[in-house]
Amino acid sequence: MNQNIQGVRTDLALEAREMLTKKIRQDIPGVLMETAENDDILITRVDITTPEAERMMGKVQGKYVTLEAPGLRYKNTPLQKKIMGFLAQELADLVKLSPNATVLIVGLGNWNITPDALGPRVAHKIVVTRHLQEMLSPELKGGVRSVCAIAPGVLGITGMETGEIIQGIVNNIKPDLVIAIDALAAASSQRVITTIQLANTGIHPGSGVGNKRFGLTQQSLGAPVIAIGVPTVVHASTIAMDTINTLQEHATFARYFKSMANLSDQDRQTIVRQVLPEMLGDLMVTPKEVDRLIEDIAAVVSGGINQALHPNIDYENIHLYLH
Image 1 (cartoon, rainbow, N blue to C red):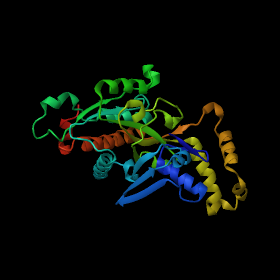
Image 2: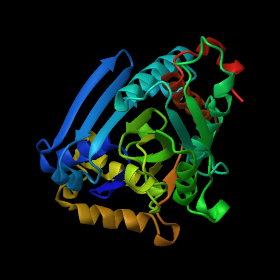
Image 3: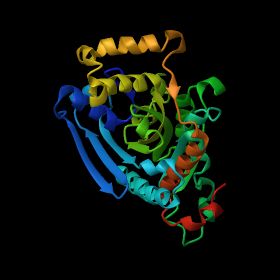
Image 4: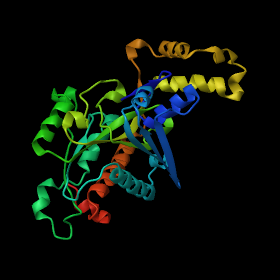
């Protein structure tokens, strides 16, 4: 669910909490948060526990885990391996799976549009084993689960709602868990490609860009759904709002823009709409090197999922298992 607070949109529960706390100037009842820092990686866990907190946050009740590492924007193999390990651990903590569980990986998004291709690229890197269960050697059994993966495309390509496709597959193979991967929108450009969010609440494909789609949830599919997302874009309106706020708050500019202190949130949004013509909609901004960044972060996300689901595989030689 995409939250819109003070005209700023975000798919991250962490950012929704930050903005709402700043707005109401107090902690949010029913929202629990804890953080853990390990060198250059920050882990934040947000737990939304009440219907009122759900309404205020604009996020479904459940657990949201965020891994943040600014170094993900750079080619840093040791950091990537480290984050894979943390991602695998957090995923294992969110859902308890038996060794013989069947897991369906769903890579959401449009593979023809790079910022939206995260899901399909992650699905391509998953170690799929459902078709090999009878052929596994004794040393691998018990530590290599039955895993299958699909990138179903988007409505504009297939003519079918993603949820309809996934629902049909789930009804047929009856997985014990569905893991859905999708690109998200952030409220801060600093979190684009540097943040990974896990949630046990399911996912609504397209919500990050304002498209309401059939939700992939336990209620709709009949199986638990873990959502994993990475912000790949930020709304242009968000950047514009940040600029206005910076002009007002930065000491160097404050004396030139004293009148901005009296601007209401509605006035700020009106200014932004004048800068961004309605005919263009709310532009989405992504880094210029997005091709490399998507490939790198897809390797991190898929690596973490593979480690969580297949603990007996030697990941130093993971290329031997990839299709």
